[in-house]
Amino acid sequence: MDLVAASRAFVGVSEHGSFTVGAAAASMSQPVASRRVAALEEHVGERLFERTSRRAVLTPFGRDLLPSARALVRAADLLLHEAETARRRPWRIAVPDVCGTVALARLVADARALGIALDLRIAPPAERLDLVRARQVRAAVLAVPSDEAVWSVPLGVATAADPGTRRVWLETLRVGRADRGPARRLWIQPEDDVPHVRDPLARLRDAIGLCPAQFAAATDLTDAVAEVLYGDDLLLCSPAQATGLGLHWRPLGELSPVRGFALRAADGGDPAGTVSRLGRALARCLGAAADGTPAGDAHPAMDTGTGTGGNGNGNGNGNGTDGEREAGTCAPAH
Image (cartoon, rainbow, N blue to C red):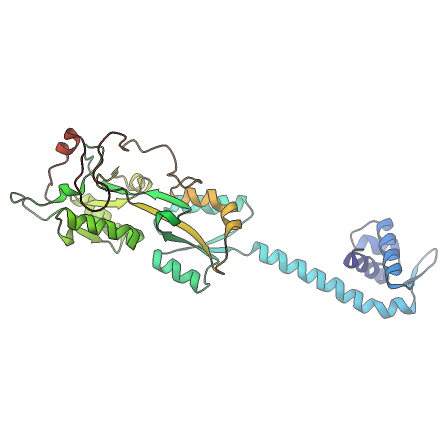
């Protein structure tokens, strides 16, 4: 027996003195109300009403039981209200600041289609980790190494002018004796200033003989893009970011850095339910497909030829084709 439904029928009939009117007030039909009251009477072992042709009058036992039945109905209604409020409460999720406005708006719209209201906190990697640890957000998209990632996004370099090659080799940034002006720099934005992305690049920088100052950590993406547009610097970024910034993107010749992302719940548990519901929307927002591969068609600049560009261990001794390497040997000054 549904004790709450039976108590609701009992309270409705008692307040109106009629099975017909009381049933309507309780949003049920008269036969249903009669069956539920009869079931409750059988369950408690006493009659609750003296039935006449015109009215339903409470028995003494029914009067004694009515306050408890009302309390049970109120408690059930409060529970349902709290559940609905909790269901409609926005999910506060910390997301990377590399997601553009359109991508974030699409994420919110996709979540709404799933019946989820999102409250996004846009923050760099370290702050997102702090937010989820402090339980200031329900979950956070964290920057993780590729072997821990749910979603992966390839990184390359973007330039203001078309480099004219299928790959860009960082060794071409070396300054020669005949070069004049400041050395070209690779700008690393805050999202990629994490050990699993930054450290392999730093080892490569040292191995190919670049100056430490040629790898610059940007505190603001706008300033870094301005340097790329003004001069001949490079920006480490994803293909989608380059497109949004109006830059030309190419993969690196020497190694293939990757942005890895995973969702972490504030309670430290497995957010599989959230991932299963929002996984595709989050993947699109981050620039990765739902299965973790880059979203969309392969970038037209992706090299499928034989140039290897090194093994990614920092030796920088790439073996690209002669034509490709020759086209990228100049290091124009600013």
